[in-house]
Length: 302
Image (cartoon, rainbow, N blue to C red; front, side, top):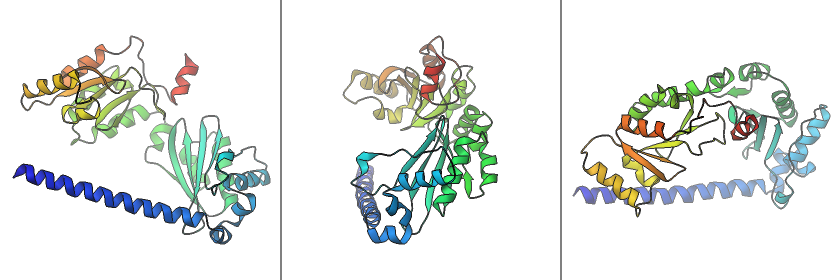
């Protein structure tokens, strides 16, 4: 009976997943159909239609306010309504989309590979001024939102502004006491080396990065996965997978963690303390604290 119930639940989950996918496809189709309509542009975004796309319209506004900012032009998207723009300056950039139900520019604000704030802006002139200020001025996210009250900082913005991003990331993970990784996270957060790397999770796996922004740099760094989710990192038809399963079967209900690197390179398994030791033993001798920024920033500092 338990197996039958389990199979029924799985079938219901799969059916629900199919319906959700169909629903999302319909919503996206309806959204893009609206965006392809000339009537839609005439009603909500005549400036985009006149300029031949959002990047062109935004660049015209930058010229009007004497800004040197420019949105990147992607010629390959000429056959579609150009409803996306990206404006970058050094380590900061903004991405802009448009709403479908009313006139609204949806913008985010990034620095050092981290999205720190968003804004919904009603007209393109205010959009250009806001982006210009973010990219050109050396201000905190809080100062930015005081200048433009419609800008909403993310919860993590203050920590990243104050250079406490590593501590913030660990505290977020420590706050989830129900996580299957909780026991290992508690140990790793206090480790003198691992605790200074930037932690993040992916598919029930704890990962480490040498930098605090995306894209992360996790190459050659260990990953930690609870044994219940080992199928995400080790193929089932491998000797390593069989070895891990045998280890788990012979250790009863003990919490077992599997250590890998570079996605599926097996390093070992054991209790939280044993996994910590394996992870430490597989760190490069020069592994240091995570630096602020993205992977490219590490290469510039070498």
